[in-house]
Length: 314
Image 1 (cartoon, helix red, strand yellow):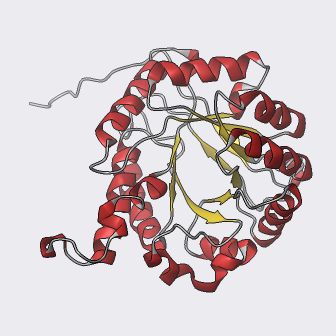
Image 2 (image 1 turned 30 degrees about the horizontal axis):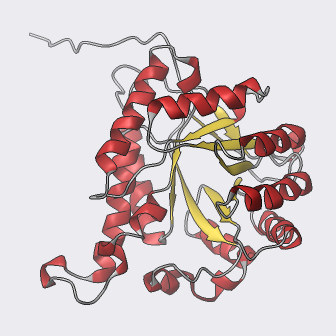
């Protein structure tokens, strides 16, 4: 007797959002990527196919980071001193897009130079992050947005303290914004409403609900992302945005990934443990509905891309 699988049909869907502009669209990217567009929960292929598979981004910096694990020096080496060379190597490592993090030491001129060098070195779509302090973010991201007008960058990090400036420059120069809030469904909705009320087109907003690493609050982050996706499918217009999360940043600040000595022998090999921590954190978030995961180690990138390929064809 055949068994009929019960299926849900949802009234809402996630908006499809395109990052990066090719020459025909006014930019210089060799390709653009589209994320979102889902009409059901992640990977329930018997209800609906996955219209756009998750994208794995690689984080690079405008300057060699002093606070990254030494394990990350091994795969990247000297290119960490040159954002353009780092971008090329990240593309070779399989990145689907690049995430360039600016620093507090950067001047507006430094930031523009770094962004232009990365755009010249790689044709991948680009996300640009300020250093994470509202005033400095505004100081750097406005000239960056103007210098890269039409490239359809994603400008981050857009929070409640600085969204007005970043949204205004994104709208004026044809870019997108990464709307970040602490792990909370209502805060995510509130920031999306504020950004939309400024007139930002809804197909140029990406949610960043933040999360924790494996063993460091990932359960709550996972739950928030699930509830955001359920609300989107139920028709809540202010949650119908694709989600970007940063498992690389979260995983590489855990003790399990950072510490190679003075830990129990049962923790095993340091590098294996660290890469596993980043990989498993990313995979859990993809299962919860992440559209972009930003990673740091190329081995994690390869593993996560292989897992995504299995998920979307299962």
